[in-house]
Image 1 (cartoon, rainbow, N blue to C red):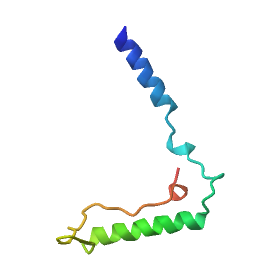
Image 2: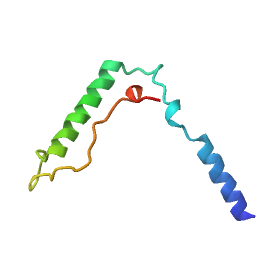
Image 3: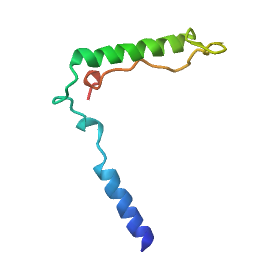
Length: 78
């Protein structure tokens, strides 16, 4: 009985989690320009890490093997 109740509780929790389609930024206070600024900042940092030119305390970080560019959810084809 406890196992069944636990399963139901987990199933209900998973059903109420937001999915990728529910992230609508239409009412956001963040403009597309600000969103793109953050995206470009992170992609530039990821590019430095991927190339192995990002410094750390011992020199530079090792290059990344499979670091892909981040894209805006609006740019992803559905």
